[in-house]
Length: 109
Image 1 (cartoon, one colour):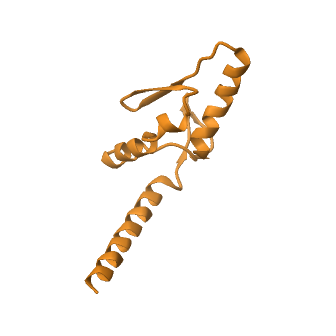
Image 2 (cartoon, one colour; image 1 turned 90 degrees about the horizontal axis):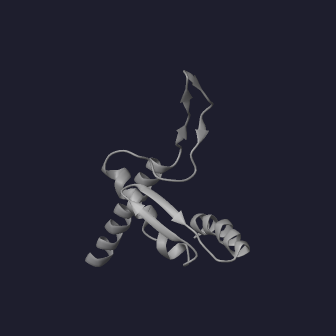
């Protein structure tokens, strides 16, 4: 009976963390201010919010699988919170295919 209780507590805590992370990531909007003019709020569908410790932790989780996801068709260059993805190939058509497919791999895994 103790094991069932531990499992239930574990699931409860896990679900609370998932809900916390979802509330932190979902429902975010951004707008740009240039020369005292702003655009309309636009939903943010990718990335991790910047900010305190939770933002840094989520960023690390977000990019953790990056090298595996890009499938050796590109090279990730990571420095602090900046990420670049470098593509090269001797054949221009293959380079173009790599450039077009790597972002899709990032989104769809």
